[in-house]
Amino acid sequence: MIIAVDGPTASGKGTIAQALAEHFGLPHLDTGLLYRAVGRQVAINDGDADDPAQALAACDFPDELLDDPALRSEETGGLASRVSVHPAVRQALFERQRAFATQPEGAVLDGRDIGTVIAPEAEVKLYVTASVQERARRRWLEMTGREVEISLDAIEQDIAKRDARDIGRADAPLRAAPDALVFDTSHFDRDQAIAEAIAAVEAALA
Ligand code: DC
Image 1 (cartoon, helix red, strand yellow):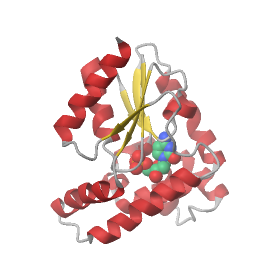
Image 2 (image 1 turned 180 degrees about the vertical axis):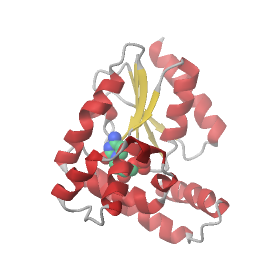
Image 3 (image 1 turned 180 degrees about the horizontal axis):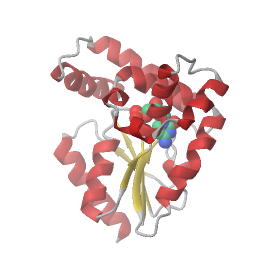
Image 4 (image 1 turned 90 degrees about the vertical axis):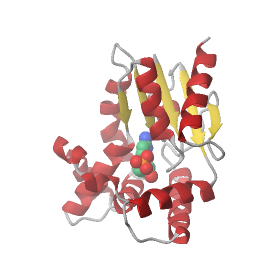
């Protein structure tokens, strides 16, 4: 069984995908991490994330980079969004994601284009979303908890910019697959979102 979980940044899709993987005993891939590794490698190369050839060259990142804590930063998230616009980058990362999705034991993948491009045949597709204000509030709480100094306003602007880029790109834009269950987590806390998502997937499979 393949479960595809797509949605914008800070929507809760990663938490939900991880919980679904645990609940159904399936391996999980956070595909955003691959794009983040490419963005980070561009920075290490002192390159330009908007240059398609330099972004493509960065797809050759070493696997150890996937464990680099810097991948989780807002800065790397922004670079990931910029490199993900280039079709050659998306193509270079396609096989790795496709192979994960089609492994015999099944899989849960989360990202932006899992239900539309990577695994359109997924048995269950969730499109997880939440208002920009709520997503900014969550990100702000998480960052200030790590003692990063940043204003709520700056995060909201950054999220809106990232959404616009991910939704507006020509190749594999962020959108809900026509057969996806749209799941708005704006009014749920973490545990409620997980419980509701599990219930929604179980209902879809019944
Ligand atoms: O989910 P995330 O915030 O880690 O993703 C970072 C960026 O990577 C996101 O802004 C767009 C890109 N991305 C993508 O284009 N396709 C995916 N399947 C996953 C992420």
